[in-house]
View 1 (cartoon, rainbow, N blue to C red):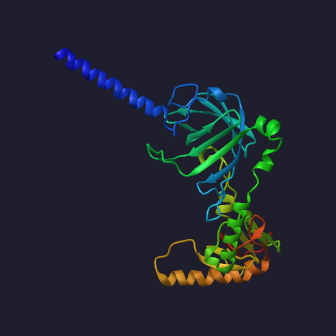
View 2: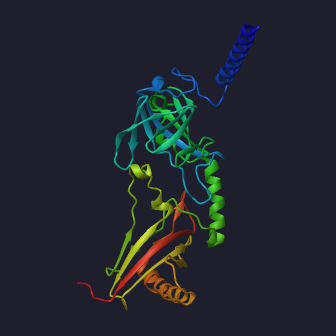
Length: 318
């Protein structure tokens, strides 16, 4: 009797295990590979060079409502199951990165968690995952990266990656709607893909735009150059020595509108005095001594927000 019960339990466990394995094999969220069934393997595409041709949100757009553009920048070549070569646009060369494989088509490389949604010798679709501390949100960040193999682009599509990366009609219409809103109400300004530009009209006025360098720590992302444009302006032969930091709305015609101070204050009266003085500098020196080109996105000029740090020196030029 006891032997029959044991046999029955073992049979149930075998059936249950079979059901679980069967469910995993039919799970559409798990990409099938030549390697282990639920663990990612890149053996089938080793040595193939892929170029990212678009990076989009779940809604199919490559722009956010704030003007941030998801640029297709990566070029990858999976050297092995534990190494990938990634191209750095700023350094103009490939770097080898260690690759850590996980389950359910998840892997980590270049300080980024990704999930394979589609993989073939012609194309690759990856989804970016959110990572917080030691945990990963496997539901995804809603950002999808599409790659085409270089040979596929050249020999099958008979095209060029530059053409394939062009912004589509859906993005153009979306940006046009944002432009109309921003030019109607400056408070609805958004980041300009071609940011505001300043050219000094006087030798006594120097302008320097802060530049972001792409490196391993920011995933070679230099988007802050346009998403958060910041300028240092030095005015020699000024009426006094001063230093102010404030934001400015630059409209589609290149006109400046004061935003707010970029520093904190202990009292409201000090804040009001600071605004009065810094706004006077903007309305005098900056407006008359700078040639201003408004920011544009997809060649459409619109209101955008910038940051300015302006220093005045009353000493004469040497």
